[in-house]
Amino acid sequence: METYQGGCHCGAVRFEVEMVAPHDALYRCNCSLCRKKGIIMKPLPQDDFKVLTGEDDLGVYQWNKKIAAHYFCKICGVYTHHRRRRDPTQISINIECLDDMDMPEADIIGLTNGLEHN
Image 1 (cartoon, rainbow, N blue to C red):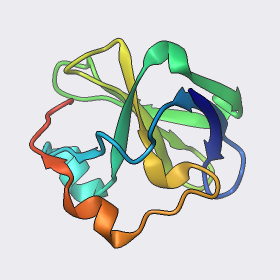
Image 2: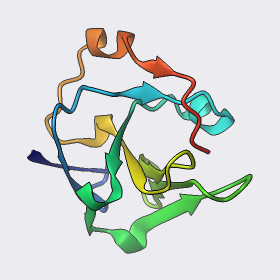
Image 3: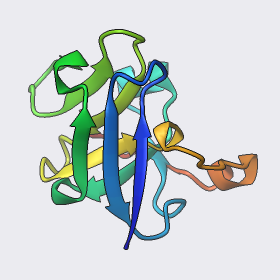
Image 4: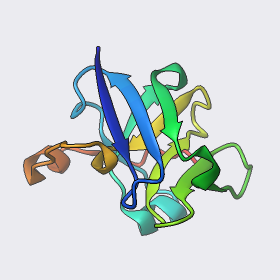
């Protein structure tokens, strides 16, 4: 396992994750919210995710069954992560929020579609 850090655009929200193979198991959800966000997500066990700074700067959006919780920076608006409906013990991070993470276009061609989490 390696440790990665990331955050929102303005830097108010910072987080840390532990994971193996950051480019594996990436997905785009096809729920109504995620289709509009167009975010590439990486699921992780909740225990492998930690907010370092800016917890008070996080807004949360929920709808429908209110199981999933979608988090974003209240200052810059960047969507950083969500708690999944499909498995509430998991957090999915916006992979593009990780520091110094290269996401070549080839890596997103094989994304899994249709994994609902709202």
